[in-house]
Image 1 (spheres, helix red, strand yellow):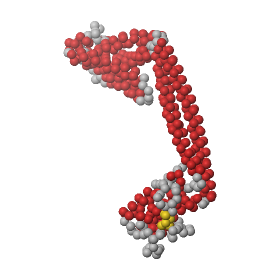
Image 2 (image 1 turned 90 degrees about the horizontal axis):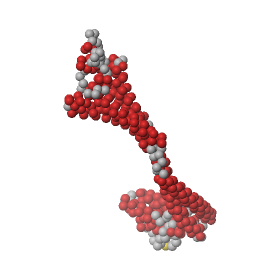
Image 3 (image 1 turned 60 degrees about the vertical axis):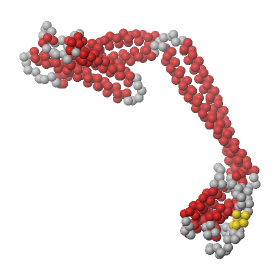
Length: 424
C-alpha cells in the first residue's frame, strides 16, 4: 500500500507511445502516463511532482517514466490549444521572414564586399605601376637637396675640426695645464686663446702620458654625441621628446659651464697672484659677471647646438637626394595600407559567406516545423518539467533521502531534459 495515497502502485503507469516532433525531444522507447493519479484541475506541476513522488516514495526508477508522461501530457494540451497553435505558426512565419530578409541583406553585403575587393585590387595595381615608373626614373635628382647636402658638408667638416681643437684645448686647460707666469703674454696679460685654442695641447698631453692624450681626444666626441643625439630626438614623434631634448641641452650647458668655470678660475688665480691687491676667491657670482666665462660657453655650447642643427639638415638632404625616394616611400606605404584593407574585406567576405550558409538550414528547419499538423512550445514544456522535478525534490528532502539517491534523481532528470532542445 502507498503510504501517502493509500493505493497500490500496481498499474500506476501504463505505456502510451507518442512520437516526438523534429527530434526536438528525443523519442523514448516508452512514454508513461499516470492513470489513476493524473494531474488534478488547478494543480501546479510543482504540486503534481510532489504528489507523484509520494506515490512511489521517491523511487528514482519511476522518475524517468513520470517525466515522459508529463512531457506527453503537456504536448497533448498544446496540440488541442488552437490559439497556441496559431501563435506558434505566426512565430515560425515571422522567424522565416526574418531569416530570409537577413539572408538577402547578407547576400547584398557580400556583393558589395566583392566589388570593394575588386576596387582595392585595381588601386593596388595602379600604385605598383607608379612604383615601377619611379624605379625607371631614378636618375632624377632633387636639386635643392643636392645643394643643401654640399653646403652642409662644407660646414660640417670645419665645424668638426674646430670641435676637436676647441674641446681638446679646453679639456687640457681645465684638467692638466698649469697657469703660471710663463703663460702671460709680453704685455703681462693672459690671452684667452691660449686656453681655448692651445696648439700645444696635443704635444703637451702626449708628453704627459697616454691617459692625458686619450682624455683630450675623447672629450670632443662627447659634445659631438650631444649634437647627434639632439638631432635624433628632434626627429622622433611623441611628446616625450619635449622632455628629453631640454634635459639634454641642460646637461650639456652644465658640462660646458663647469669647464668654463675651471679655466676662468685658473686665469683669475693667476691674475690675483700677479696683482698687489687682495682679491676674494673665485666664485659662481664672480663667474656670472666674468665675460670670459660666457665667451668660453658660447664658443662651445652654442657651437655644438649649431653643429646639431647643421647635421640635421645634412641628414635630411641625404634622404631627399633622390627625388623619387620620398615618392617611393609614400607609394609603398599606400600599397601596404591598401593591402591591409583588401585583407580585411576578404575576411569580411568569408564571414558573410559563412553566415549566409548557416541561414539555409535554419529556414529548412522552420519549413519542417510548419509542415506538421501540430507545433509545441518547447520552452514551456521544459519549464513545467523543471517545476515537476522541483516538487519531486521537495518530497525527497521531506523523506530525508540520502545524497546518493538525490543525485541519482538529478542525473535522471538531466538526462531527460537534455533531449528537449529549445531552438530560437
